[in-house]
Length: 170
Image: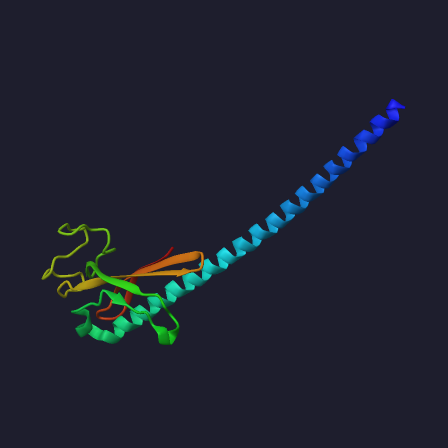
């Protein structure tokens, strides 16, 4: 008879253990679904932020081109936001240096230092004319949407026409 009582005493803990395992499995499945949806939302927010930052950068370049050479003398520190175009992002503009035509990359030479291929003003270029210096403008747009954020930047030269030296998206 003690054997029958011992069997009955084991049944209740086994049933409770099975219910505990089923509950843990259900919790783990719902947790995984929640993490997947949170990751998808975060990816969507990041994609939207990248698009807004790139769009604001394009608006800023268009605005600088519209200002023309006279507007570059007093370069605005901030461009935007553009509410008519549904962009709440502002773009920070700054002078990044001077690019002498014929030079590889304007960002590699420290101020006051000459790179091997850099001509000094008044010096002849390989084409025969005087070396021409152009102002390099750096534009940085930062966008945040929900949990996502992005930064787009570009270095451009506007004279004698628009030239994009570098474009970065983070």
